[in-house]
Image 1: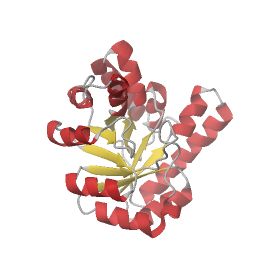
Image 2: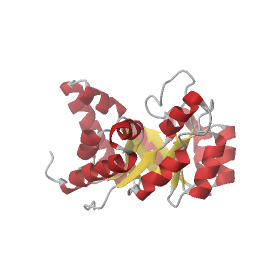
Image 3: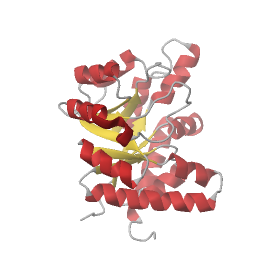
Image 4: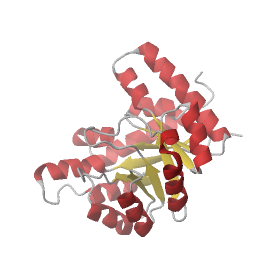
Length: 254
């Protein structure tokens, strides 16, 4: 049975590192951003170590592991290199995501079915030390495959829905929201913990928080952008407030 439990916020600090890397050097420091997010009430930190190291670097992950007092969600592709890093560091959680060199950010969800036995082996290996999450589209076949692969968590890709909302494509937004609602219910029924993320802002985070099956939202780019104008502390608190409003609306949104 799903109850009105609190919902967690995981703050992705990748784009703090993006700003730093635009000029080189050490400022702004994603570890400092992580600590500020936690002080403002965030429940965890997400960082994606990409193959090309375009934002988060190896030493950032090392420092996050030793300098924050909150769970680290380590996003990564299921490559031998990344599996080796995760096995050595043993973060609280590992989220497997698709990764292409040409993309600006993660595009779409992981194809768990196409991943086959290699992905299942990666999940099994990583599960020895970390909770394993799969970042997937809210599709029935991908959710069912994630459960069969042995993942503890699925993170539902909200990017298509958020893009439709931002461009006022009401028909697509409505269809994508239904997919998320049904996907969250299915995943929960299969014993998976359900997270969501990608493209969320204050409004979409508030609405997605009305889905009682969702235990956590992972948000980064929007928070970093808003922090330019409102400050990091206020931005994190405003997001937490939006999520709390959504949680209070559970049952009121059809």
